[in-house]
Every structure is written in C-alpha cells, then in structure tokens.
Image 1 (cartoon, one colour):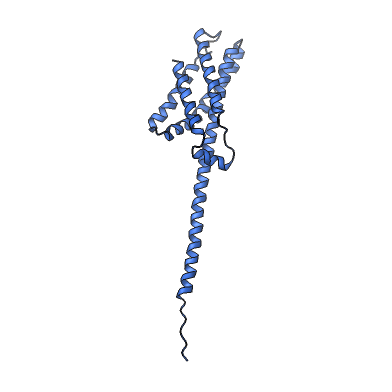
Image 2 (tube, rainbow, N blue to C red):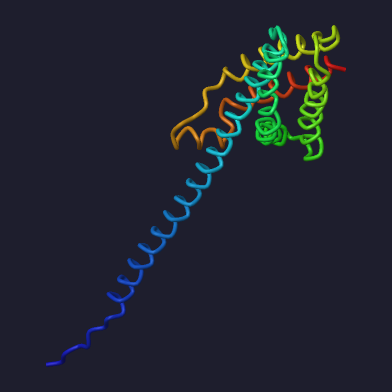
Length: 198
C-alpha cells in the first residue's frame, strides 16, 4: 500500500487569495469613503459660502434701504452699522463666485478679478456716504438707489437655489449641480452693479 503525500499548496493558495480579496475590498471601500467625505466637506464649504452671498445681498439691500429711508442722523447711523457686514460677507462670497468662474474654465487671475473688482468698487462707492453728516446729497441718493435696486435683484437671483443641508446635497453641490448658473448670474449682476456706480 502506498500512501500519497497530501499537498497543502492549493488550500493555502485559496486562503491567501481569499484574504487578499478581503483586504482589497476593505481598502477600496476606505478609499471610497474618504473620497465621499472629502466631497461632502467641500460641498459644505461651498454651501456656507453661498449663504454668505445671500447675507451679502441682504446686507447691501438693508443698508441702502436704511440709508435712503433715514430721516435723521440717528437713522443713518443705525443703517451704517449694516455696512460693517458687507466686507466679511463679501469676502466669503468671493470664494463661491471665484469657484464658479474657475469651473466655467476661466483662468485664476480672470476669475479673481471678475469678483474682487466689483466688490471693491461697490465698497469704495458706499464707504464715504453719510460720513459728512447732514442730508444725503443727490449723488449719494442716486448711488444708494442704484445699489438698492441691484441688491434686490441679487437677492432674488440667489433665492433661485436652496442651500443644501444634508450630506447627499453637499456632494451634489460639490459636483456643481444647480448652483453654478445661479452663481454666474449673481457674479454678472455684481459686475453690472459696479459698472452702474461709475
């Protein structure tokens, strides 16, 4: 009687292949989860910036309406406190509008200047209004009326997109779903507003 030796090569190879398959699945799912959480985080950041754009438009509208309707120095002073919200909200909004330009294929310099120039022009035009005291001049009133009309239009445009609140919607925002045309239109309106103030 001859007894053959059993080889363990095949079972060992099957076990190794099974372990490698499990390892590959675990690593691949980890990569997918990391990618998904990165997209969610970027979408959340974009959503915050979109909210800042809405706050900028709102502050611009409230400031200009407050200055136009103020009957005395106290009313103008109350309205001028709203002007302090323009720089921080505009700075955060800049990031969203810049991103919309980049995604439209613009160069970085072009996308930056397309947003910073109008924001700075609006800020520079509004800054001296009401500082001298007394009644607003005809030019100041005209500037505020132009800003108010532009701010109302900007607010209406930005309301066309509802800011996401869930992870899935954040990932959609990162992918550019729905918000890009609205942001581009808002950027164009800011540019038109700045030109109207020249």
